[in-house]
Image 1 (cartoon, rainbow, N blue to C red):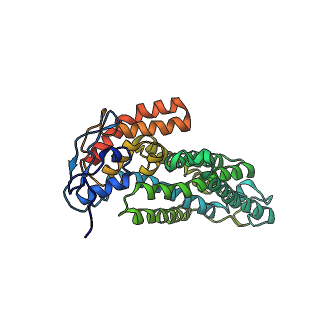
Image 2: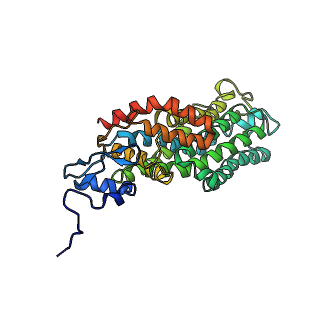
Image 3: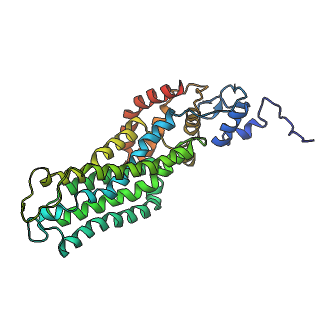
Length: 348
């Protein structure tokens, strides 16, 4: 017969002094699912509030919720990865004609042109290899996957602007190299973020969506260039109309979704994974996030609103990445937005 530890019954957790401050989020979620008493909240950051009894039923995380919103924003990185890889296939033959790499206003298949096009493609993958290596560096690893994605968005914007304003080979190669660094960071950080922010029951499906959006980005990059004409023949030597400038739009387009993603992550959804919050010592914020991830209403009301801790955690992360002033700005701007977001999700 299994012996139960002394001081333990069906409705209480033994040794509360040991449990308080040492209960990991995974244990908290397990207690909620089994119908045991769970800590009701935090008062003055160290004391427990009254316990809350949860019905003995299996928790099924909602399809949307705070984790679904964060995942949707992170999937933009998959789109940027796929688009950046395939966009040269849509405009690579017209760039040599515009810059006259073959000393001709219609040829694009000479040796010099082929070498230049190879450099444009290779620079992206060289930058991607560098970006993937940088993610493992301590300076970037401590920022967490959300801020890593924001950094990759900044690189995508800079690279796209450099490409669309290029007047020669050097600027195009430089822009693709910068975009490649962002690609390497996003290709590593985005799947990690989606995996860690999602509930265990939704994790596999949401992580697979990253690969789906990579394919969607490739499809959009190819489809966007279908209405362009092929390089001119000797009978039609001059480029005209959309063929003169549309390639700049194709190379500069990633700046738009990158800016959108960075803005959403910085202001609308400033939420980091619970595991990363635990590593930073933000136990209360990690507990809040787990409640919201599983669609459980917060059994306590923290001072300043249900999402004040998320705003504070975002400010701490921004302060580490961009200095003290960056943390102050993030706390001031994201506080109201995150409060509305978390209260809305917690009521679903």
